[in-house]
Structures are given as structure tokens and as C-alpha cells.
Length: 241
Ligand SMILES: C[S@@+](CC[C@H](N)C(=O)[O-])C[C@H]1O[C@@H](n2cnc3c(N)ncnc32)[C@H](O)[C@@H]1O
Picture 1 (cartoon, rainbow, N blue to C red):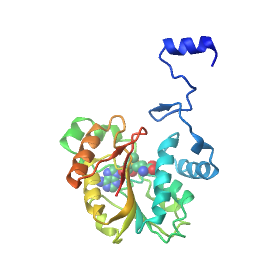
Picture 2: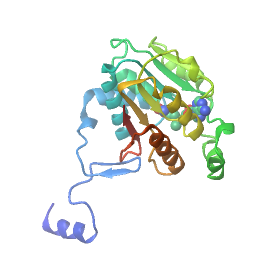
Picture 3: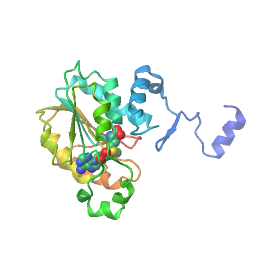
């Protein structure tokens, strides 16, 4: 950076170093070396190819790191809120679940949020309208996307009613991403005692912009359990048991 640029950036309050990442609500000058890693590139591409999301690299990096850590932890993997399978498809590309002898349960209505489970505050905040056209029927597509991964078990239906369809006594990894407080808290309560020591929970919406009601609910839940949630600049929340 030359002297003129330095003065300009000081006057404008701009960062001293070049911005390395600017997407998904996160701008930083820090090292994004993970984005040049071949395994990451392949896994992110597999996830994005499902059509679930695009350009959320740092969130994908977080969840892949967590899933990979949990290969060493006793128990199965699960995700509540899978949609077209973006995170899940990236995870199976990145972490060798078959070798680690783990099942991966994917729970979703595969038809969108359950309106009847929205809290009054969520209704007042317009959650129903916000997600009305976002999540379409994608069950057949998800079955197709995971047909070559026999350890992936797809559980179609409404959480919490379907939670008991996960037969695992021990859980190593949980991704919670339903954009809806009641089923998220129900899933956290249901699986907390089954989560092994060292097991990880990734809360996708924890501190994400516009998700303040989930932030409040997740924090209340954590306080009841006597734990604290790590708030990540991606908007995700992280718990390591
Ligand atoms: C943000 S999307 C999940 C995105 C996904 N993790 C990915 O990688 O793309 C939220 C999903 O939660 C599901 N969902 C919301 N409420 C639910 C409930 N009570 N039971 C089951 N699925 C639910 C929706 O159908 C939707 O597919």
C-alpha cells in the first residue's frame, strides 16, 4: 500500500490490509487459506451443486472442520434441517464417514417450515411469509443426491415428531438448521444427553443477521444446560461438549 492509499484508507476508516473475504455478511482481511485447499474446494463444490446455497464458503469451512473433528468422536452424525442437502453433501465429500463407521441422519420435512410450530414472536416477525417460497418439495432430489452413500439415512417428516426415528444411542455431530425455534430446541433437548464427550453442535443461524429470536432461544437453552455458545463471525454458533 503506498502512502496516498494509506492516508486515504486512514481517513475513510478502511482496513489497513486488503480485504480477503466479503460474502454472506462477513468482511475480513484475515487469511482465507482454507479456500485454496483442494479437499475444501471439492467438498464445497459438491455441496453447492445440490442447489441449496452458494457463496457461503466460511460457513462451509466451519461445518466441514466440525464434521471432520467428530470422525474421532463416538456416535453417529445428524442434521436437522437439510433442505436440498448442501451441507450434508459437502460433509460426505470431505469426511470419510464410511471408514469411520458412522451413519448420517438427515431430518427434514423436505417441504419447508412447519407453520404450526412457529412461535407468536416468529409469526409477528413475518417468518412464515419470509420462507413461504424458499423451500419447495425436494425429497426425491435429496434421495437421488445421496443414493451412493448407504450410511446416509433420510428421515422425512416434521421435527420433533421424527426425532425418535433416529435409533442412535450416541451422537458425535449435529447440525441444527431449521430456521425455527420450537423444533430446534426440541432437537437440542432430545439429543443433548446422547451427544458424546467431544461431540460438536453447529447452529447455523445462531448469530446470523435477522435471527435474533433464535439467538435468544439458543442462549436460554444453553444457560439451562450450564454451557455457553461460541459466537462465530459467520453467524454460526458452536458448541463442543
Ligand atoms: C435453511 S434450510 C436447511 C439448509 C441446509 N442445512 C443446507 O445445507 O442447505 C431449513 C430447512 O429446515 C426444514 N425445516 C424447518 N422446520 C422443520 C421441522 N419442524 N421439521 C423438519 N424440517 C424442518 C425446512 O424444510 C428447510 O428445508
